[in-house]
Image (cartoon, rainbow, N blue to C red; front, side, top):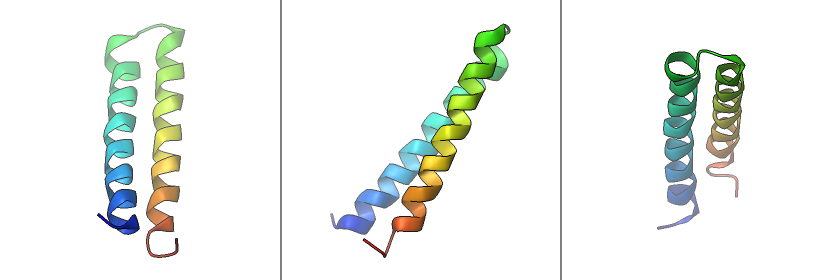
Length: 58
């Protein structure tokens, strides 16, 4: 695996974890903790976007 493949897998995993975190916040935790889980999920999306932007540049 080269650098771009590693970044692609990292991006994919971060998107999956972000979706899971947003799902936890939306469907499992109905209290204030749900907002925290959703915010962390959005943060995972932001990091995945950065990983995707780095593909081909590193």
